[in-house]
Image (cartoon, rainbow, N blue to C red; front, side):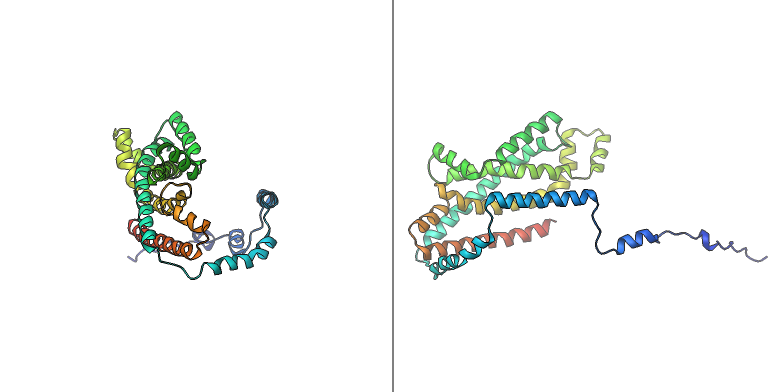
Length: 283
């Protein structure tokens, strides 16, 4: 008895899986897609917003080009850098770094707790709305305003700057923390809930493990921003190297000013590269 052979399928009934239709092939090979009516409307609105902003803000490329020689004159007066007060610069940079560390640590811990209330997949609607309103209010006030408020409350010095950094950190990073928690995969959360896990257990074993890499990365970015922010708070007497920077500008001590700028660049670069290595490790 010979083996039975399966009947050959007609070519017209062969599977077309993995093959594109002519319309799909034409769409994918088209280098540029012509936007539809909605796309044209969005582009037009964006162009109008840019033109309106340029007209209202006095944006002028001509004025910038005409001012380039004066920028060159300013930069030429900063050369060469004067490191005669290098010990003062180092001491104030260390103070700036200390302010950023404390401000980031306390601010990120408080932000983590507030972000639980600002995440829509964790908190009830009334708590979510309240936390979001509070964060919007905190984020809308510049850190320099916080620094002025705390300088009047606790006096001049780095402590006022630390308090300003804490409030600024809460306003800026709590929203990002909350959005990282909202973006986690809902499957493990439903699995935990189906086993009778409490809300605290869902957060501890479902949300935090998934969002931990993003939370760590955002905290490192916050720290980098707080280092730069701490250099500015000294302009209002809130500690750090900003006060020395201001005095150098007022006294037209351009060599010392350039030395401060170089030192800040070196510090920020070292922190940036270090945090980049850490982010690669955790992600």
